[in-house]
Every structure is written in structure tokens, then in C-alpha cells.
Length: 505
Image (cartoon, rainbow, N blue to C red):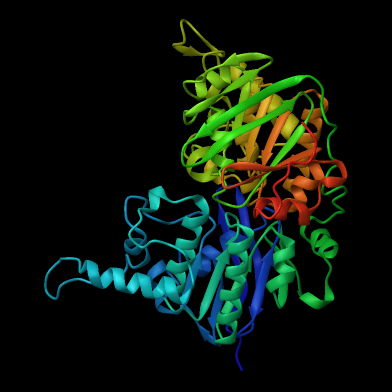
């Protein structure tokens, strides 16, 4: 029986970059085949070639033994290939139902009029079949990042493809939603569908994959059965070296008070939140999606006003009217939504890094930018963060995900902040870049910076934080430190089955 897909010697170059070089691999029908590698290894480029977004410069693609000519997304879909991209491809001003069926909306015969009841019924049937808790009438712009990801998944699945490509499908999902995705994958596999699965979360690879292909620097390194590998072996093949101390040591408890939150409340999101963040401390915040953890951090940064409560910075009560006030008080922020709210994709690396400090590097009453100071600032954070880019004027959209994340972090640090707030700081980046960010956060805490980290990755929080707050339904149900910090206990607090705060701050 012919393989579901065979890729032969595919090469793809961009100006100054060889994204793929003579890559070959085959995927058996009905298997879950993982493709892994560091950011920039060529994974997403290969998937975009299969999905019709890019055309290969050289090479051949066979579907079930027959040569396939994939010159557009429409041709890919027509040949049974559907892609769930890491970066959302949704229309925020449309409803969930309209996004699901945007390519084949039900209309009145002979008239360009939408049959809304028919659309609603089709959307409800699809969401029920996938057991997804989504309102088809909701506007995508009003959904959380995780719910947008579920819309993207449902949109791809309704096409009834024989080959489904999943590019970081769980990057924005909670543990419960990941379990639901696993169920969907098992059902699709039982139906004989083939799945190409890309993820930086190696546990997922070992949970769902039958075989793994490793890419490095645009080249094929190895394809092995999952039973013949360990996570350490996969990491070594991905990065070509040992990644020591993948998770850093948890930082110390910290010293003087940097930030105090007292009775902070925002109706519909969280209520009566109080805690202290100390200088030199890395404080984690855990909780399921919808618990209010992201809204809490955004309120502290001034992105949304609280309804009650107070903030103290360095012992002084402050009131924030917006992020500008937070920056002036020494608070930095890294968003969880790198693509839509973090980077400015068409602007250069230099411009992205210095955007928040233009007033400090300008002269003539802010009219003229002093490029020497701008370049000096970029050089400082390029060294500190080990940023990798071809040229300072290179649009940031062409950087790998890990380097884009470092650019967002550099922009926050360029303000000389003393308090750093991070939402999902390692979402969608490879193990090498993760290790670098963990080491960086440890170094910042040793320098006295107060760091607050919200993450869905519990092993990440446990490893890098000296204390973890757990939020459930907008309330703190756990304040854990020392021996209290364990996955099982965090999950009990995150699900409301344990509500007494531990000890800690």
C-alpha cells in the first residue's frame, strides 16, 4: 500500500536563507507522524508547501503514490489536505459559524443571501460532533486565545480531509482542551486519517505520535518509531548538542517588596486578589483558562481598569490610567499573543525593540531619532538575549518564533523595568529557546528584578518559580512555596477542590 504522502528532495529558499534543503520523508496512511525541530528548522515551511501557501523550488510530492501538484491552498484542500496553522487564520469580525464555513456559506439559491438558520444548524452539528463548547453566534474577536484555537481546529476538521496537518495545535489550549484534542486525534486515526503533528511540547509527541521526524537547519536528521526514542534523544537530534539544565533552578524567595496587590477586583474576571511580589523573586501564576489569571496581569499593567482594590509599587500606592503609566513606574509586560499583540511584523527588528523608548532616544523635542543610540540599544539586547537575525532592518515577521519572542522581551527590558510581567513566555518556541529564556529569567531575578510569570506549563512554573499562586474562578485558591509546590496540588487548587492558601507571601 502506498504511503499517504511522500516528500522527495524538497528544497525551498528565501532571500538569504535556505529554509529546506533536499528534505525527504514518507508518512504512512493512518499514522500520527510528528515533525520536530528548533524554530527555523524548516517545519512550518514544509507544512506551508504541503498546504499550498508556498511552492517548493525543487523536489516532488506524492499523495498515495501519485505525483501531486499543489500550487495554492485551494488545490491542497481539493486533494484532501487541511492545515491547522500555529498562527490563526480567522476573521475576528465574523462569528464562529461564519468562520467555520467561510468557504462554503449556505446561501439562497440564485441569490447572494446568507441562510443564517442553515449556517447555525451546520455549525451546531459540527461543534456537537467534536464535543466543543463554543457558541456559534459568538464573534471571534470576543473569544479567548484558547477558544480561537478550537475554532481553528474545528474549521480544519469540517473539510473532511484525508491528511490533516497540525502546526502547534495545543499552543494556546488548557490541559482539558488538550485532552479533548487527543480524543479527536484518536478518532481521526481510527477512521484511517493521516496526521502530521508539529509541537515543541515533547510530552505531546510521546503521547500521540507513532513516528517522529527530526529536522535541523532545514535538513532531515532522522525518522524513528516513537518506541525507539527518549525525550533526551529527540532534544539532542533537534539541537545537535546536549541542552543542559532545560529547566533552571527555582529562584530565591526575594527581598524587599516590589509590587503589592490589595483587594484587586475586576467584575466578571477576578475579585479580591491580594499578594506581594518581591525584588529578586520569580512568582508563578497557575490556573485553568478562564480563571482570570491573564486578566489580572493585564489589569496590573494598566490595560484594563480595576473596579476596586489598590496597587503599590516600591511601597507607594499608584493608580494606572494605561500602560504608559506602568512603563514610567518600571513595569514591563510581555503578551501571550505574540502575533497579534506582540510584534509589529512589517517593522524592523530595531524598530520593534526600541518602540517603547523612542522618547529617550530622540532629540530636537522628540522629532529626530538618534540612530546611534537606537543601534546601541539593539546591540545591548542582542548580546544579552542572544538574538539572531540577518540584519537590523530585517522585518521581524521573518524571524523564528523564538527570536520574535526575544524581541518582545527585549522591548520590555529596554524600558529598564524593575518589575516584569510575562504571559505564556515560552508558548510556541523550541526547547533551545526555552532553555535560554529560563536562564535569562534566572539571571534577571539574580540582578534583583521582580518577575511574575503566567504559564499553562506546570513543569515550567515548578522549575523556575520559588512561589506559585493558583487562581480558580477569579480567586486565589493557593499560595504555594517549597515542598507545597507539586503538580497534583496545583491542579487541586486550580479546579477548586482545594482552597486553602499555603504559606508564602
